[in-house]
Image: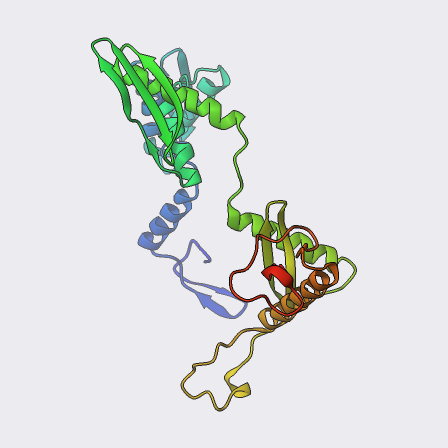
Amino acid sequence: SLRTAGPRSIHRGTIWEPDSPDEMKRQREEDDKLLPPEERDAVSWLQRHAHSMRWELPVYEEASRSGEAHNPVFTFRVKVGPVDITADGTNKKLAKQNVARAAMAAAKGQGLVPREKPQKIKSHAQGLHELVQRQGWQLSYPWVQRTPFDFVCAAVINGKTVSEERGSTRRQARENASQRANQTLRTEPTRQPFALSIVDLAMASFGSLTEHIRTASSSCMACFVMESASGMKVVGMGSGTGYFSDRLNPEDQDREMVMDGHAEVLARRSLLRFLYNQLELALSKGPTGVTKGGASPGPMEGPSPPGLPGGALPW
């Protein structure tokens, strides 16, 4: 907005009205909100600083006044702790704020700042509790022994005893058990969740197959993973860029059909190829049922399938 000395002024053919006193005050308040706290209200900030430094409250006094009657200049002085400084302002309120800002700057320049409060050290029990919460485990502290001045506490996670420690009080025994449990959990490698293991294995297999193939950014991937004594491996995989719509099945009015996407359909086809390959491999090796990558889990109950004497499973 354009502020002028007169009631109205013309600027490039447009008449501009000056801001009202209320509008100017609101504008100053909005500008002050953008300042940091020590700049917004230096007087209150200096008082809190003096309290944190265990000083006496700041003492302000008008040192002098100069200038014309319509444009005076006030000089204020403040004494707080070892700081004694003066500053000017066009009115008393502004001069007081300026001298408070100057005092704050002088105190910081001399290194007169409050000491930082020491951080509270977490107990071992609190640290263990935070750890089990992040991992989604269950923690309990059953008592193994409770006699006067002799307590034995155990830290049990997911039903497994991780540590047992002794203490002269209940709190000390629990703290000692938590400390030993923290040390044990940090030294022993934690097993990755089963679902994440499948995801990592699937993504690694997909990446090795598509290393030199450009895929769509919206591709979906599905796979079948087989777990055995030797580990896990991907036995079927497929990827697609979308899902089947209802238009492909106009007869399915009751929505009874499973609307799988391209990735699931192709993954099932890949799984069938793997199973057929295993059948062919088992038949070529005779009745032992040995498969590529592992042995059969055992004989199959009931009549033996053709070509598989003894009922050996082909996979």
